Length: 136
Ligand code: FES
Image (spheres, rainbow, N blue to C red):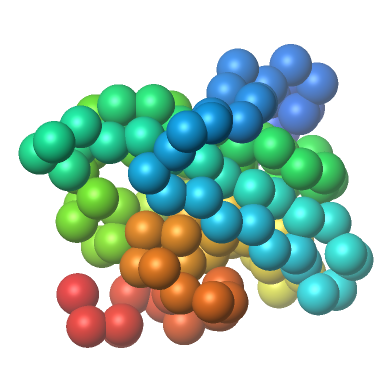
């Protein structure tokens, strides 16, 4: 089963479906993984009800962070900003479908941290944003 998910990750890294930037956008944020310097930006557009209608990611990352960003963008289209605020690392791990050690976990969670910092309007992305205990 892991092999199937690994293939998905490699394919998403090579041919991401949601790479790009949105200008104008309603939310945008970018930050880097301090361990490697790779960075991800996420742009989001919403409608008048706060539902996400478009989203895209850009930047440079490894296979895991790119695949995670690509899958995450797909997962948030049609969701509300409030639903995005409630997303946790478990949601990202479900999307990726593989077990990850601590170093690769940082890669996988970078896009969600960036996304959540953007929708919360924060100056900085932090691990706390994806732990599921930030007051949801
Ligand atoms: Fe840099 Fe994965 S090695 S984000």
